[in-house]
Length: 498
Image (cartoon, rainbow, N blue to C red; front, side, top):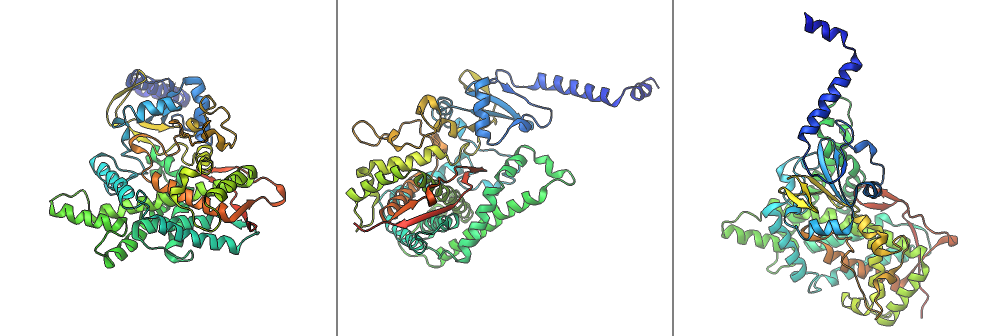
């Protein structure tokens, strides 16, 4: 009876206080020791309610309080933020193997099949596939320039669309998505699609949905239990997962079926080479390479390649509109080295350092994936004297590394000259991290560098990117998985004949 009487006499708020004290005691005795400075935030939700948008700028403010390496709790998950280049380098270069893991739970990765690829996987399966993709890009495609004629052919279609719209304000997002998506199709299958083709349009819809819902995916990654609450917003999350998994996998199946049906004796594309590698592994009784692996690697190439390249290109066109003086310098260099009568080649880049510097400056100032994808340390490790428990989520602030005044001086200014040395040659410092660094650096970097060089040189060889009425375009961005310009209406005009 005494216990029952106690329960009746204690008020609701008293019980809340008791539960809070119990929670604090539990947290105190279970929190890992020797963590970097940081904040646990609130019970259950952690620091999530205090992270304003964009989070990478919020992390900069927190770093001023806690230092370049700090911890947060998002839900019950421990997160370590690496907020400057030195911290990112120490983790991703000096201890690359340990910090190359990916998150293994949450809403973003729900089952093992989704780890079969380049983005969500880690371990031996991922290592073998990453090595194969890099080898294929270097030896059978970008490295030997055998892919260049296919790119230039696609660029001709792109330029033809621009000519039809010369002098008119044109929504450019879909045009760029279609063209840059075709480059991935060309790489994977050797085929291209008309911009109105159902396959291209389906992929664009799926990519839009995935990119726009990125914040919700992140939320459900840290709070997977939220979807079990009645009335929670489960529909959009499951719709996103259906779009991302089923639609892009369906597209990958279609294009791979075409490759299998039309297979030739020689390696004509990535899927062709992968199929040959799969058969070789079957003869050697190995199971790393399979039809499932091809499906997921192709999905990852389609997802990552088209998304980042098209948005970088759009950002570049906006900055060129706002900086005609930069545009004129690039065009002067192109006219002197390439001229107007022949198509550019990736081999021209050594003789066009300012053009490459301009593209690099677009990468830097935009930082299209400002926080990359979260890493995971695969074992307990010491970082800058702090103890990082196994399976901690690691977030690198690539945006701040690319926009740190201590490194760049005037990072807010669009100034390609920062990449030109006193001798006139291109100089790219090690703290340029737009493609990330270490073993999780972007596997498609060689392709991205080639296609953006050829696109920008072809564009400025034939067109001026102009401002209407002298008004600068807004630089506002949508902060999702990648940074996307809110404004996409661009005006290009054919250059006057020499």
